[in-house]
Amino acid sequence: MTTPPGPERDSVSVSLTSLGLERDAIYLYDALARIEKDDERAEAFRTMAATERRHAAIWEERLRAEGAAVPPPRRPRIRVRFIVVAARAFGTRAVADMVTALEGKEEAFYASQVGLSPETDEAVQSIAAEEAANAEAWRQLGPQPPKPSHTARVRARALENGTRDGVAVAKAATSPADIVRSEKWHRAGQSGTLRATIFGVSDGLVSNTALVMGVAGADPDPSIILLSGIAGLLAGAFSMAAGEWVSMQSQRELFERQIELERAELQAMPEEEEAELAAAYRSKGFTAEEADQIAHRVFQDPTVALDTIVREELGLDPGQLGSPWGAAIGSFLAFTVGAIVPVVPYVFLSGAAAFALSLGASLAAMFLVGVAVSLLTGRNPLFSGLRQVILGGAAAGVTFLVGRLIGVSVS
Image (tube, rainbow, N blue to C red):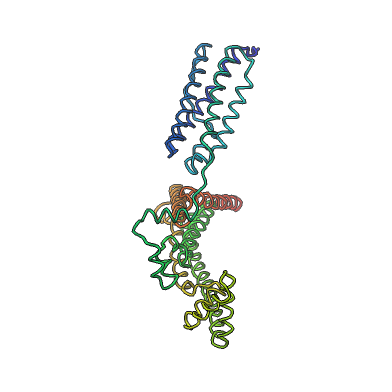
């Protein structure tokens, strides 16, 4: 017959649980201190870790006083490890709410133990006071500061490079294109070829990885997996190239048609077109006299007049229509580069080794694609990389399971 646990056993259990909580907190705050770049916040985390070490020492001493063994440190809870991973990816400020919730659960546990024994009450009350100090320290750290505006970032960039005289550049410019060329941060993403290339690498990598994993899930002969991967590579590359060419060519023809219509109207009724341009300038805040003068000046040169009308009325930049062949070739090559990654291991290996290398190389390549995209978008590289891995890995996992189910049912 088992004897019900008495007060002494309850006290030992509380001490063990409390020690585990404090060791988790030590791991958490030590990790946050290492991650944090701001010296003041890092020092605050180190102070919190020192506080949690004192708490842990109290519970270790309680265990020894009760004749119980002090257990060796164990791995932190999954929730604590997740907070650390999130802090590495998004910064310590992003996990403030999660840490606060964790501290709240710890305080609730201690509050539930009051009345167990005088010795335990004394330890809990001592620790609770310092836990409140930790909570106050979190509040003093303050909310996440707002990100600098685009204007602030551009101004800071200009100040960093004292040799750039933006006013002089603007005064010497003969067209908006000259200004765009001087401001290199505006150039990324304007070309249809660049967009097609980025999309092609990502699409080729994700789609062919999913295809290879799906076929591998059915566990066929390795040559079947290799053949499927190569077929998927070629089919996808040609499909991407053809689709991009048709899309870009159709868009270009549409824009060219609209420009031709504006050219015909300019030749047939220049006075009406000049009046329309003046109306556009009035809508921007110019007076009627100023708008008429600007429009009349623009219409002195038919080429400048057509370019201005296309920009103002159609919202088009004639110099940025994009190249269908450039987009098609870029898509084909980019898709091939991405799609070949999961296929190469099956050229040299087979079985589990080929599968593991194919999956590992594909996930690593997805991460690199995400990081490369972040260089254009300005997003956190780790966030972009992990996002790409999660999306691509999910696609590969689903197709693998489908392949495994179909393979089992057929066999």
